[in-house]
Structure formats: structure tokens, C-alpha cells
Amino acid sequence: MPDVSSTKQDSTGANRESASEQQPPSDSQVTSSTAAADYRIRCPRLPLAVYREIAAHLRQIDGVNAGLLPQSSQTFDYLTSQVGGLWISYQYSPHQLAQQQVERVLAYYGDRFGSWEVV
Image (cartoon, rainbow, N blue to C red; front, side, top):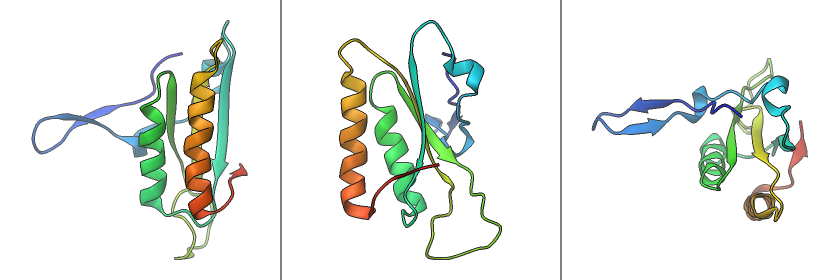
């Protein structure tokens, strides 16, 4: 699967990944000879900063890519999140270690901020 992440240089000249510019993989990108998982989830009261933290945490897992979905609401509500949700994509592996790690990360944040919903 092609890498959809992008990098930018910060003020120190170091490259950093830009989560806000990442796009979820298209259907053609996740359809390949190896099975892939593609999820779109949200937690209604999750702050933007925590969404970014979760995406960064998930991208540290080998074979996992994650990013933010754009907000789709037409009205502004300060108490709800400023993003539409989180997309997660990864290749299935025989031992499914990545899936277990993703589930643990999501469970950790779900326990603190509320249950996840499928988008």
C-alpha cells in the first residue's frame, strides 16, 4: 500500500509528519493481494489534541497508518470535537500483533473519553 503520509520541516529544519494533511486510503489503495483493515471511528467528545495524540500513537505501530477525518458538521459546537473522526489502516499479519496493539490503544483512550463509534 502506498504511504499517504507527508513530511514537513519544522523551524529547526527537522522533518515532521503532518497528520492533518494525511488522507484516508482510497478503496483502490486498500484492495490488494494481502488483506487489509480500514476503520473509520469517532468519539463524540474527544478533543482535537487527543485525536492527534492517538493518530501519532497508532502510527508508531509497525504496519499501521492513521489520520484525522475532516469535520462534517455544518454547525459549530464548542463541546464537540473539531474533527470528524479517526481513520486507521493496516495490513493483517499472521500473528495479528498490530491488531492487538491498535485495540489496546483504542481501549485506553475509550476508557478515558467514552466509547468509540463507527463512522
